[in-house]
Image (cartoon, rainbow, N blue to C red):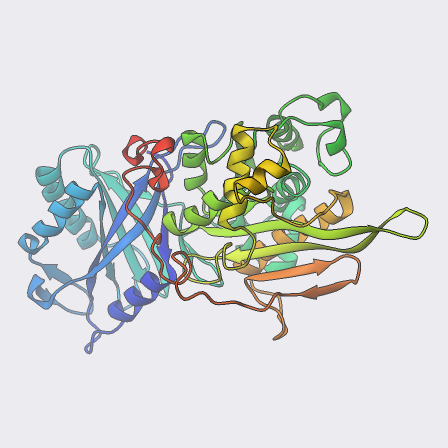
Length: 482
């Protein structure tokens, strides 16, 4: 069986802890978490199911036969309606309980309860089902997965990720005390757990050009365990001033494939899988994206950013989006001069931070213009105006020091989410800041809250049910990969 990963929203985690630790006599308590299971195979990466928590159900007092600080007994018949919901909505049943006295491991009684539940689920929903067990003890989550086909085998999860700020990562595998020299400085700066946590993550990078390639190579050197690289562009001569890991011999080849070869050639601990496609067009690429814990947006494609903006809510992911902007004017001699040039880093969690629309990174007219250009590459500016369309974004030359510096800031942002070290002044937003390479300033746009925003305010896409992937029929049905 593969190494499963669990994801909880920050609000789900907080509600569970408050309930489990809240018994007036410090008895054990139990709850149910219903998960969606993403079983996605990415070539080049170890197989790893991702379980996303969809709903938390606390045990009703009527379901409990007896409890104490060292045991919990429940009425199995009370859960039948939840079993039915799992079958009808293709959800995975998760049994959650605590050990108030602090035994930070599953007990023999836990084994028996899990096997009883699994047998009941199997009889009701069939032999294909999986089952998740979670234990809260000593302020940590331990979790494991069983299947109806092999009920006696309990597979520990690779980690349980809580999408709060900062991120909380439980159950990750501890490495040996002796870190390799490659990661020794990371351990010295942020602690040994930091190195083990970042190794446990699967990180997606959409776009492998000026920001994506340095981000991927430095991320591999930092110890990210798995990378999913998505890009469909070929390397051009004009890319060579800023793309890392590629050379003139690679011109005309797919950037993403050559970047993977470079990362593999580093012979570090990072595994990389690639998709030579657009994330908004290829169902397999979108599945690969959905399998990630964290996603970096390194594309200037507004359609791709739109997909990532929805996916972070639908699949409970962390999105760190990068962009560059600026303006060039001519001086008195006719030579170009950078009036300003900045790198932007946007950090959005499912329940924290403004979405890319509210940050003015994307808008609907820019998305529609890009789709129109895909259909008609020769369309003129006049024809676009006739359709009430316009190109978006700021003029920004792709120059290596600026693209690489932006990538460095973005990777440091992930570091800060895992092990906080930054001290943000009040004038800076945590969800978006810009580094001006001309004025040498760091600033943020003033927050403009749109209370009607379906993404970050109304949460219409948060853990959304999907008949089609992200409700887009052209990308295919969701049940094709669950």
